[in-house]
Image (cartoon, rainbow, N blue to C red; front, side, top):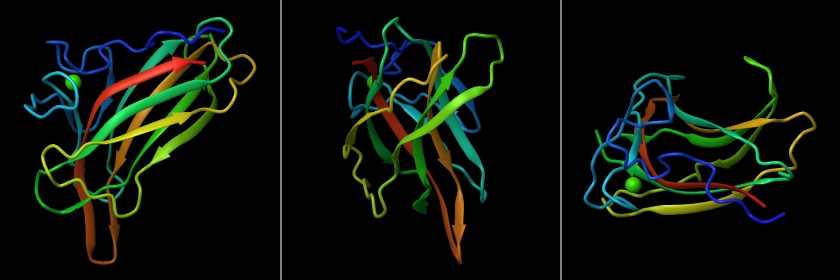
Length: 172
Ligand SMILES: [Ca+2]
């Protein structure tokens, strides 16, 4: 099968409407950034300010016929908000059936924050590329999720936020 174009809408978060086409939960925003990875705006998750608090952006896409795997790439950097340590984050794919409110058939974690990831400069983006496992039988849609979660380990709060830009989701 020929590789698809980007399945995501508003993939660089440039739409004038805040995070258009992305579903959101928790503290999220769409700041302008003169040092955006691409264009002029980014998606920001957090800061999360409690143990277990989450900030999520996600987008559901219809899978093209013949989809076998999904490929995702994106850029990420720490959002320098309050100087505390950065919260863990992960990127997942949920494979969904075709019925309304269908249960998630399978959720895969494609990328997690690397221990010791430090991007404190305002133009210090890291880029990631990941490939899912095979599409489960019955999957019609997929949901790409960026999840930031506050954590407390001992006396240390991991409450910082992150910024995301230039997300590309394609089939093989
Ligand atoms: Ca952008």
